Length: 251
Image (cartoon, rainbow, N blue to C red; front, side):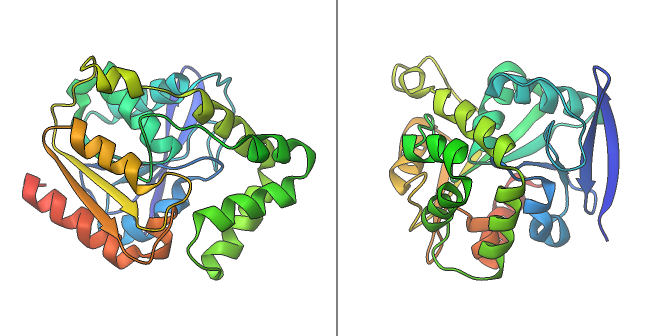
């Protein structure tokens, strides 16, 4: 049974969905919310945030990935535990920023379907303004290996939140740490698991391989038959990879 709690950050109530007590903290992708991690919270446990303007969290002014990272960092500090941070796509950008600004609250990182740079197709960004339904179809065609219940659920969710989705993807488009990794300016010193779907067209496998090359203590898992929404498409395989990583860390 999942529980919901609220943490206040600068007067903004932030919603957290909780499974069994586990030092794992999940950050969702663009236009989504904590329920993206429902299958992980039920099987593995931990905490999943609704970023500001998403899910049950209150609204806040957000102008960059750094702003989301600030809210995540403050929530973690208030919870008062070091966590393994799991971030998908936009969430992966957020947890990278959390680590770079507050490494002391991170036990490890799990980077899922994300990158050091997250450019977004102009057709998607422009389409979300002019023809949201067509743009959402394009995102989902690139984000799922096949249509099904999760595909249709995500379609409804994205169409209801087209404005938030557009903002999130605009922030992703500006996110770029690529040269900082290449030049050695960024060094991640905590154990890191990198998970990607083999058919991911939004954040291709080469993005994950880049992380694996530039993060010394990292492990790469490519999940067959999955695309970008890997935790929804292949939850058992995803959970197995995450649980194995956590056990290796003794968590």
